[in-house]
Image (tube, one colour):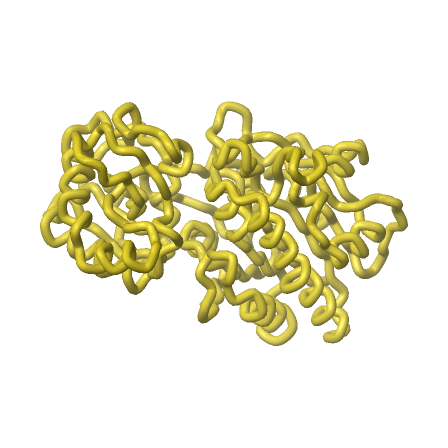
Length: 400
C-alpha cells in the first residue's frame, strides 16, 4: 500500500456572500474531488491544538503526526533546516519576510503594511535585496540567509525567543503597534526600509505596477528543532514535495526525502505537474511508501483577499494535482490511500489563519466506500466524523 497526502494550504474558508453563501471549496468546480468524495470517508479534523497560534508550522506538524505541543519550537528554525543554515543550541532563528510598506512621508512606525509577499517576488530579485540589507545590517550576532521568494532567515547568535507579529496577520494596518519590543530588531527593520526603499530593483518593480519589497520584517522566532524520525515513528519511508522552506525543513528534521521540483514557487502558477511527477516517481520507482504534496496557492490567495483567485487555486489543485495523482497511481497498478485536506482555514474576510476544524477526505483504492456527499466544510461537518486531535489523523490514515 502506498500513501499520498494532498495538502491545500489554507484552503478552508467561511461562506462568502458573492459565492452564494458558499465557501470557495464548495463553490469551486472540482470534478475529481466530487468523484472521489462519493467513494471516501469525509469528516473534520482539529489541526491546531487549543491555546496555540494557527500557523502552517503547527498545523503541518500536526497533519504529519507530530503533536505541536511536544515538537514545536518555532517556525523559522524549521525553515532554517531546509536551507541548510547551521544552528547551535543557543541560536535563535527568525523568519525575515521582505514585505511592502507604504511609502508616504512621515515616521517609520506610521507606515502601513500593504503586502506580506511583495507581489510574490521572485527569489532572484529578492536575494539581491536581502544581500543589500545584510551588507549593512549583518554582523557576528545577526546573520542573514537567503530562502525562497520573500521568505528568508535571520540567525540571532545567543538570542532570545521574543514575541513577534506575523506580517500576514496585520495586512492593511499601521505597523507601530506590531513592531518588535527588542530595540536591535526594531532598528534593523527601520534601517532596512531606508536601504531598500530606493533600491533600483524596487524602482523598476513600481514602474511595472508591482509592489516594492522595501522592508525586512522579523517574526517566527524559535530554537533549534528536535523532531523524531518519520520512518521510525510510522514504519513508512516518506517524501516531501513542496515549494515552501517550512515544509522542506519539517521533512529534513523528520528524516524524510525532499523533492526538488523546478518551477515550484508557492504561487498560483507553480509547477503542479512537476510536483505530481515527483511524488508518483518516489512512490512507484524510488522505494518510498508515503508522499506529502503541499500546495501553497490557496493560502496565498486567502492572504491576498482574492475570492476569485482562491477559487481558481482550489480548481487548479483539483485539476492539476488530485486528478493526475489518482490517474497515475491507478495506471501504475498501485494500491494506495489518499488523504486530502487543508492545514488550517485562511478566510478571505480576515486574510489570515484561524484555528477552526478543517475538512478531510480519505480515499482507499482497495475498498472504496459509497456515499452521497461532496468534499467541503459543510458536508464534512454533517458527516459526524471528527478527529479532535490533529496529530492522531496520520496514524489513522496509515492504519497504525
